[in-house]
Amino acid sequence: MTETKDAAAAHAHEPHHESLGSRLNWLRAGVLGANDGIVSVAGLVVGVAGATTDHGAILMAGIAGLVAGALSMAGGEYVSVSTQRDTEQAALKLEKQELKTMPEAEERELADIYEDKGLSRELAERVARELSEKDALAAHAEAELGIDPDDLTSPWQAAWASFVSFSLGALIPLLAIALPPTSWRVWTCAIAVVVGLALTGYTSARLGNAGVRRAVIRNVGVGALTMLVTYYVGALFGITAG
Image (cartoon, rainbow, N blue to C red; front, side, top):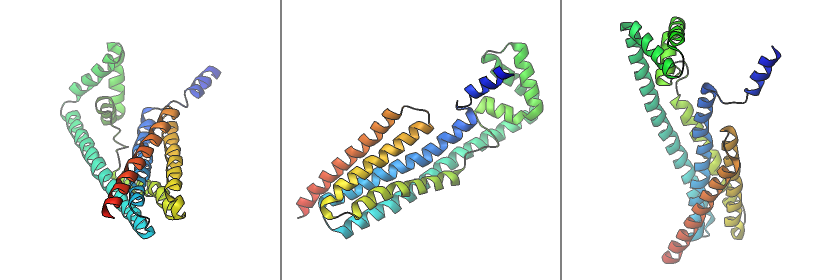
């Protein structure tokens, strides 16, 4: 009994199908949305700051970038996840029809899947039979399609997560460049963006059980390159316009 509890505790931290799928969905729509908000608006406001010192112009550009980017992210996530959900529902509908019209063939197919995974034919047939008796659709959906019928992706959830996370991320460079004096704006924004991207990189790596160092370096590197390029592009056009 003690060994069983110890084994369960030892594996409690490991990501399983349901928790990992939900976690990755939030990572994609949440943390990555914050990354996009930081990088996109940082590039925009730093680029404008390279072209002009006008506080109003920089602030308006940042606000416009925040609103447009947040709406674009939310809309893109809604369309993308809606398409995914429609595909899942269509696959479940077909599977449900097949279970209704040819249950024996579907049970044999399920047994084949478990046999291919390494079970003996006798055990595979027994597993397929018992799972089908309990909830045939759930058993087939999970084994054949990798879908949980009771936990389909939510387009509205993904859209709101993207909207909020992008907006929160975008506020970092926007406030960092809008609040300080003119001579400190770009450097303050750069430091704030580096810190923000380091935090989102660290968070995404920890929640996804991935390497922290690589994620942080990648995030910060992309943000720094974005600000560097856009600043000099803005400076170039600012000189040309002047």
